[in-house]
Length: 140
Image 1 (cartoon, helix red, strand yellow):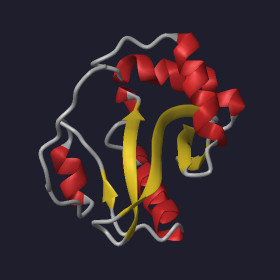
Image 2 (tube, rainbow, N blue to C red):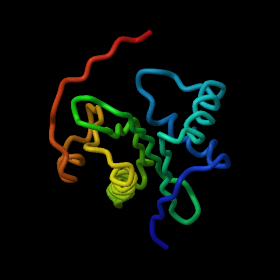
Image 3 (tube, rainbow, N blue to C red):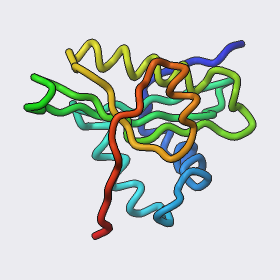
């Protein structure tokens, strides 16, 4: 059985939280805040949370949203998070998640997909992403 991609639902919350624990670098995840965010995300019409499953086990997720912009003459889709369990990397789960996100973005008439990362530049370049800007942030 191969890797399947689908939209996340409420029953996936614990599996996605477990993956997040290996992903988070700047903040320490806690279940209370995660649950609040999760419930907002899965009910937001401008967002999508995808999961990658292998043998009915969630091995990865991708979360993104879109919004209107002036500079792009319309919608831009932002890939906020993508995570694949380390044991399943290099088996196309990340590529499949990203391709499904791209399909969603095209269906919403987004002009581009953007993301910020310090890792995996070769992964994104192999999928025709270009380096574009410097990312700044300010913790609040």
